Length: 126
Image (cartoon, rainbow, N blue to C red; front, side, top):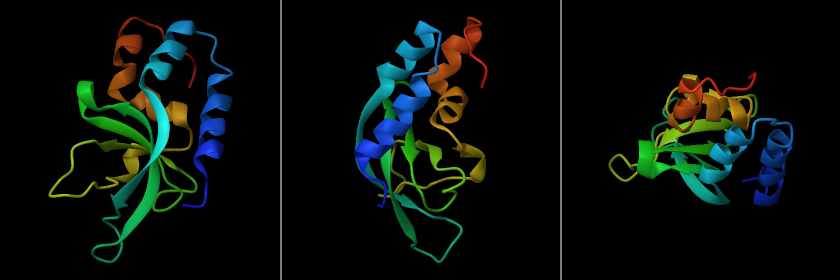
């Protein structure tokens, strides 16, 4: 893992600094966690290939999902991914490219954590 947790936290803080809607900011802050390591299965390479990343947002109790940061696989162009929190046979897949984004907030807006905001019409430009 080449990007240290403090750098990932700074990337997220930079995205949060431009938010103007406090309800959006609070929804993000509710699920943010200190970056913790995660191993992700890469389903498009050699069998058993895995990449290391960081869990940065935990929505496991509500939707069984996490937002992770990983520079490999779909990164570096799309390093922010939505993945299932529940392990499948002891491992966690990176999933498909449609679950990976260029920014943390893009991943957040595509997650179930943003659903209440979208339903109430509280969504900032993406």
